[in-house]
Amino acid sequence: MDVQDQLSARLSQLSAMLTMTKGAGFKTFSNWSDEIQANYLWACSMLAEECKGLSDFSIDLPAD
Image (tube, rainbow, N blue to C red):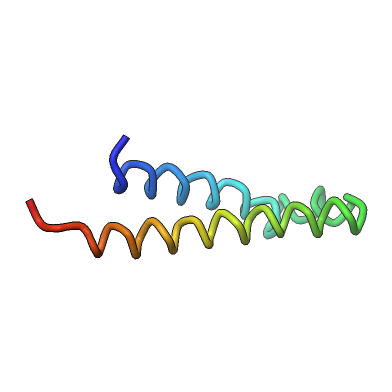
């Protein structure tokens, strides 16, 4: 899997995870314990940081 594919996959995963924090998904999210909510948002944050790293890496790659 190349960097662009990996970045796209991670962004899709992050987008899916974030649907639980808004709209209809928020009702379920808000019923989770504080610890689970914090860990969930931590996972989202880690995915976002990974995406940033992949984006920075892809910018540094030489053009084909």
